[in-house]
Image (cartoon, rainbow, N blue to C red; front, side):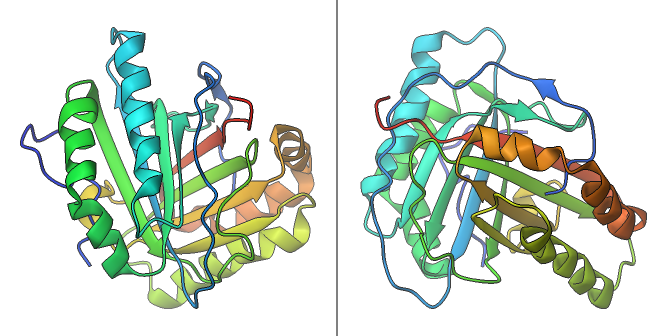
Length: 255
């Protein structure tokens, strides 16, 4: 999967839970600076999933996560967090780490991707220890009130791969179902969704969403609403060819 040349793997070319949990190791405590804020009329969500090689030294993993989190200081970045996933809820996914960041525009995402510091972290800390990477980028359907997520927030990330010949009308209906989840499940502070605009790196997944909860407790409580979740699944499952669901927790302020 990986190209060993140093290139902007995360550059831009211009939740529903569908399966039982597969638990990975809980996040280790690494700090992430997510204090930037900005008033903007649009927002680009950028998510990268990493599969770290099984026998990788923990020091090298820490260096990767620390290097990625350090990119929050770059001017185009509105928010950035990176670390180990809490859970992966999809049998087709074995990713171990995740990066989530936000930008005012696709151009700002491109600027971040081409920055020398980003290129250095990719070359020195990411490529040598990862054997699989995928990324999805989308323009959020709405701008969250808080762009920079607080420490200990819990994120549920969902990627959807649609069956062939699904029409744009049906795609819009699926996005409508995702948007409606916030009204049906208490505890969701933010939810954004949209169509991926970086297909080359997304393994065929074309729709994505992020739901943000105050913490793990609220995220797990939302999953207890089985009847509502089942109803939402029934609305979209006939159009899906694959689903990836990832749970992630931002490091606490004391990390």
